[in-house]
Length: 258
Image (cartoon, rainbow, N blue to C red; front, side, top):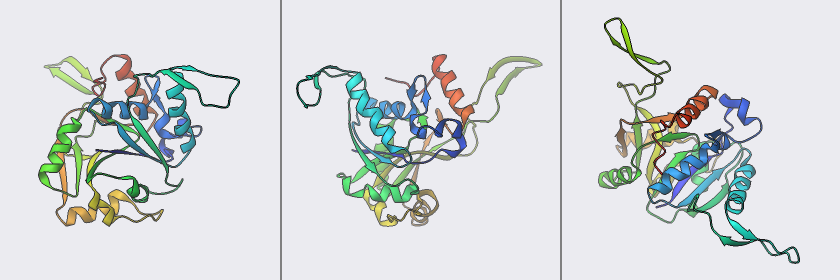
């Protein structure tokens, strides 16, 4: 099953970083968040990716092209115009990636529609290039197939904006930063979609995904929710980036299972 990652947004709410790079290349723990997302899927055995590129997409192409070279042993013949000969492949990421330019200002729905011709299976994974989660992706896929839905999203509890105090009487026993809230679910952005989803989309730049296609799919009772009570965190701003960095440095990053 293929994995589509939407990598085209401008990330205006984290403009301190995205003035010079696309949001998926913002680093956490010394690696782009996109690298973490790809690693998560490969851990569950998914190794065919389609990246829907937009804003500064060439930088994403350049990153993965150089990653293949710089993380491997290779031989370079200066007397020929041949490409470097890979002597020993790196096992840093074991996957195949198709890079597709879907327009700098295209909304999510239009980006998904523009990669339709590259989808070869009845169902495929889809996620955004700015969030991490410890959801079991194989169970998510099985849930989608068993429900025979057009689309399945991962429903998550959003993290609190504030730390939570664990009290015993008047004593603070524990301080937990950004705990997952126990009430209410939101769309966590990890999907499995049937190719019928393309019937709800157009290649127009203003074709959205959540506000449009998913709403219509829900009205037809074809949108399922896989409830995930574990960790989920998007990277919308600098504070989110710093929190994810903190989790990695303190070895408390639940999504790192490789």
